[in-house]
Length: 446
View 1 (cartoon, rainbow, N blue to C red):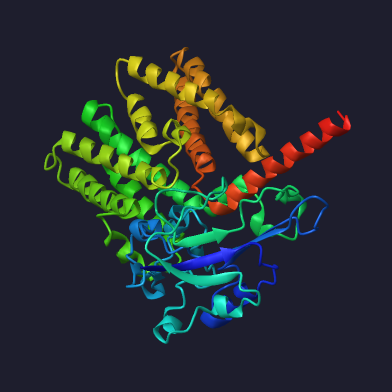
View 2 (view 1 turned 120 degrees about the horizontal axis):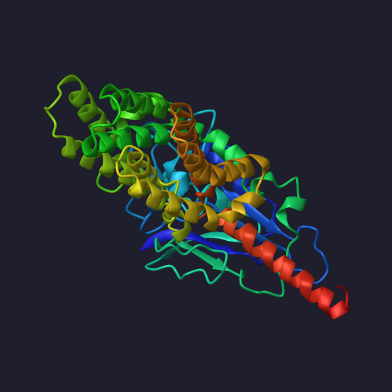
């Protein structure tokens, strides 16, 4: 038997007592329990719906599997427990969880998450959120298998959440106004790409340095025209140093390598450390490491970088993105290869990827600028290479590497892990738009 929550939308009145009780009982930050509300204005013909969700304590928790620091465990009741004293604040679990349960506490630097009030459970007392609910909308239940939530907006990713939702499929509503029109509900707004790029700057710089170093090692193995031996070692060292900036609790960075078996992030860190060691040996002890062994290690490192993102966003679009680490690394390596036919082929593939992602031109100004620069950089490189002079070739090289960096930034912008908050917003926004179109047709308004 597994313990989990049962929620009845018909009984919830949006009093938010459950959220307040969770904060007071556990000392969590506001919003650890998610409260979603639609049609608060109670517009005619539209049903008011409220939804209270915290951790769903999944049978196959993605947070536990992905955590590199092994900060998660599962107790005998099936409750997924997060141990703050083990957490290094990498936030990878926030990518892996499709239900927006783990929250990073920016002030403390580590994750906070519902743990079904295990201390109270030991004394046979229900969780604080349940005892605080005045209407009985929120309860704890025990089942061998929880039924799937039959709702288009509820992500089903195969991890079997321990939650039973009632009264959420009656579609006399809920139709809502677009979330952008409710400035008071900041937590339900769509993510802002610019903010994401700024917030994740350390990951962007880290990945660019790893890609550059790996590509130079591959180029060195294939062609003698590769870069100096010391550059990859210096770049990888810089990447490891910058990776600390992403952690909330840097003193626990050593825990990043504890979950190599199941965590893509842990495997990435191990591969970058290993490649750094090999790069230094290649620099300080030339010939000690075979160049093809270096190239294989570099390629595996690039794959490990990509898997961190592919494990959270499994969309085909991301796998075809020319900003992914493996493609970018090979693309850079082809710059040093003669004949240039391989470089031309990869340039065409990059151009096709950019064309497929034409919707990036409809986003905010920064993303538009990056997209147009990436699109123009591909033909511009060939125009600059054509004269064959040293000056134009140097400019072409600068444009080429700048285009790779822009494409990597676009990769981060296009990276969207499955998240309940976004699927809810997108689903009901489209439902609202469909209802508006239907009403226009019925009233004869164009």
